[in-house]
Every structure is written in structure tokens, then in C-alpha cells.
Image 1 (spheres, helix red, strand yellow):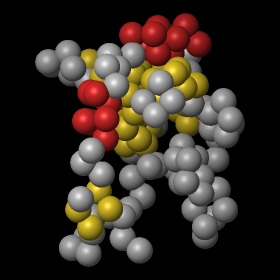
Image 2 (tube, one colour; image 1 turned 90 degrees about the vertical axis):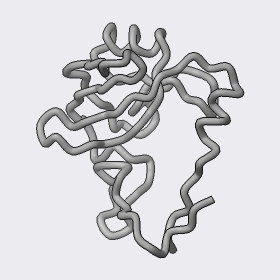
Image 3 (cartoon, helix red, strand yellow; image 1 turned 180 degrees about the vertical axis):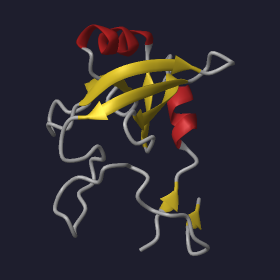
Image 4 (cartoon, one colour; image 1 turned 120 degrees about the vertical axis):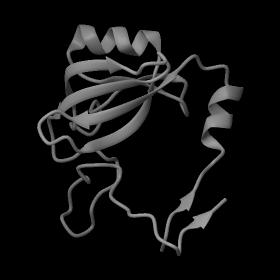
Amino acid sequence: MMPTLDFSKLNQIASSHSHVLPCVVQNASTGEVIMLAYVSKESITESIDRGYAVFWSTSRQELWVKGATSGNYLKLIDIYVNCENNSVLFKVLPQGSGACHVIDPTAGTHFSTCFHRKLSSELTIL
């Protein structure tokens, strides 16, 4: 089954009055893009203090320590800011079996990246 793109996520975030920025997460060793998450001022400070990636959960409206429940922590190496100061890049070293919350049915472990599906002409767009 092909995934359905969800164009409503950013509207949901905007309407929740969350003060967040998009955060691209990249494997510092391989250059692979692992995921896209959102960060608040507090989650960036927590990430720096802990040395591990901490995000803002837009669905739960709370800090989200990546790996706290799965064991798949992301060791923080560097934080970069884009030229318009409206998004960040976390360079990390994954510390578990994978980074995605979805489990690869073939391997039985978490996918190493949330970007494990390729866009095709069969994709449904909302």
C-alpha cells in the first residue's frame, strides 16, 4: 500500500500556537537524513544539556526525548541553523537499532531512517 501524503500537519502545528521550528536530523557518520522533527527553545536547550536529541512533540505538546521509550537515542554532535534562522539541522550518531518508530518487517528492527519509502506515481495525495 502506498502512503498518503498529509498536507495538514503544518496547519495543525500553527493552530496549536506551538512555537517550534522544523529540525532535519542527519546521521553525522553517513550523511543519511534520518528524520524531520520539531524543536522548541526548551528542547534545543535540553538537547545541548543532555548531549542527546530532544524534540517538541507536536501531537502531545510536550518535550520528547528521542529514545526514552525505544532505546534508540540520538547522540547530538552538532546543531546548524539555516540562513533564515527558521529551521535547524541536528547532526547525530544513532545509538540503537534504528531511528524510525516504524519496524521493518523484514529485519524486525526499527528502520534506520523515517525516509524509507520512495515517492511513486501510485502515491495518494490529500
